[in-house]
Length: 341
Image (cartoon, rainbow, N blue to C red; front, top):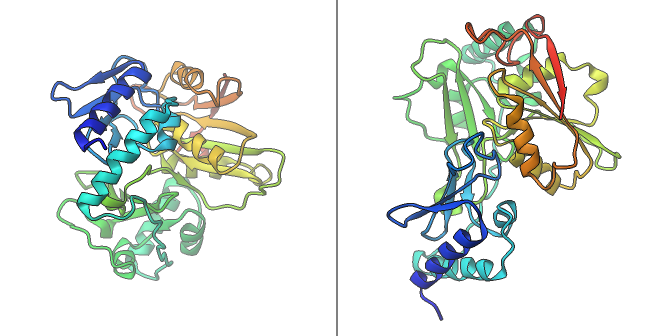
């Protein structure tokens, strides 16, 4: 039986052989490849997805922030179909778990309790969001529909989550729960904090699998429908803005999702794996992302090559002032420009 060093060398060589282009870091501790979830943008020779060559072979993309560990699913995403590599991963992880006393490597979805607290913090968070969009949503609606955390302080107490407030003032923020409940995404509502955003990962390293900050608005989908609509934006405030300008008749059987980065492929793959194979895909893009980015994303994905993708920009975007850069604004600050690729 091979020891871990042999398994690791085999994993390294098989990735370098089957994933092109791929590069080995000078210290041989990592291999970097083109990220299958964001396609690394324009610089295809960069390789922003780093894979640790130590079990359990964690990976992280420094562009779209998708992270996890190598398994049969992520190897498929990397378009690596090699039984020998699968067996090497299994062997290395088996040895790793035995030495670490770990019986299983998996992320257990946490059941988070989110309540519409009647507090000053909640009132401030609701006022921030409604002022931003020109809406009149109730606290209860924001919590139920948008999975908003309107009082983070009470939320932390309710769910026994310890946070360090030295770097970010959660009391003056609004939060959101990611699709898989692995992340909490917070936004400053005062515009006075050093960092506008702060994220909390609820997934312990020893339970790591493929996770992301991706987010979706709550809604019911008819799984028997002939097709569904998948609407994606880069950020959470963008997808809420898009939801606000979408007529009610068009919201039926529509998933409103935010990649929380540029990992659009990861969002699409997630819903394909849930069984939604016939999807109308629409992306509402930030103004500073060129259409060639989406063309490259489509061309690089075996799932999207033959699909029609609709991309919308806010034509009011001013590159100098950044006004109209995205869709996280009031409806009167949005004018749609449509491109089909």
